[in-house]
Length: 67
Image (cartoon, rainbow, N blue to C red; front, top):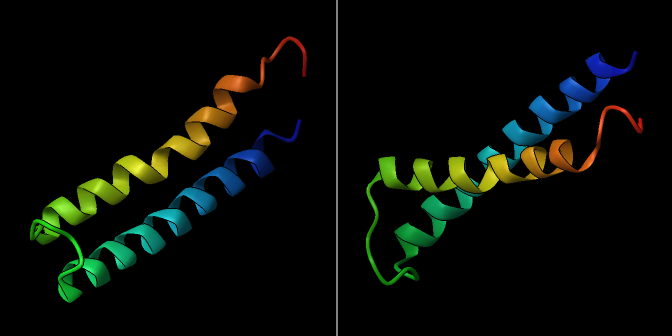
C-alpha cells in the first residue's frame, strides 16, 4: 500500500546519507585529521558501508505480518 513512499524515502535517505558521509570523509581526509590517508575509492567505500545500515536496519525491524 505505502511501499512506494517507503521505498522512495529509503532510497533518497540513503543517497543523502551517502553524499554527506562521503563529503565529510573527503573533508577530514584532506585536513589530515584521519591518521591514515585514504584514497578517494576508500572514502567512497566507507561512505557506502556506513550509509546502507540505516535502511537495512529499518527494514529488518518491521515485520510484514504485523504491519
